[in-house]
Structures are given as C-alpha cells and as structure tokens.
Image (cartoon, rainbow, N blue to C red; front, side, top):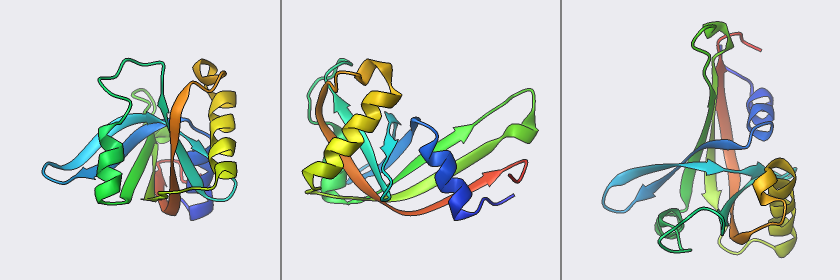
Length: 142
C-alpha cells in the first residue's frame, strides 16, 4: 500500500541509516550507505565524519552533488520471516550548497543524539539537502 507523504516522512525521520544515491557524471547512479538526520523544517543532514577510514575527507558524493544537486535517500525495512512488515521510503533531495550554520548545527546535534559514535560530533562537515518529496510503500498499509 502506498504511504501518504506524512507517513513516509515519519518513517524517514524515525530512522538513521539508508542508501544515498547521487549521480556520477560518467558512471551514472552512485549509491552508498549513509547515516542521516532529518530536521523539523524538511532537510536531511549526512555527516562526513572523522571516525571511519577514508582516502580523503572529500567524498565522491560531494563531487557528485556539486555536479548535479539532485539526490535520493532510500530507507527500507526487510523482514524475511514476515513480509507483512516490509516497507520502504524514498526521499528526493536537492543539495543545499551554503546552508545556514544554524541548520548545519541542528543536524549535527541530531546526529550526535541518534548515533552514539557521533556523540562528540566528529565531523569534517555535514552535507545538507532539502527534501523535495517523499514516497513510500508498506505491506501493512500503515
């Protein structure tokens, strides 16, 4: 059953992990796992942290968003034993190149509260995207 925008947004906001999809200029779709937080005013923050090993603090998703500001975040729940509990939500996003510090700070604080490893806000930066639309589906229709 299709979820209403309100239901889809609520499921998106209640979770912290999904797959962020950007567009690589040559390869096309470029999905990667991502931790995120949702603000009250309809933005998503995706951290670039200093915890996990990286070749560079500048990530491919940042370059992709610079070239094409559109993205998507897919969040889903899978239950192999009970398919009545399956659901997914997709948020269409637009990168905000110069977000106000108050928005970035709010999203960083939300990430710190939601993810224990981020309690000290070990971020190089937080990428900010505006939620353009949300869609979703749930087997139970709720």
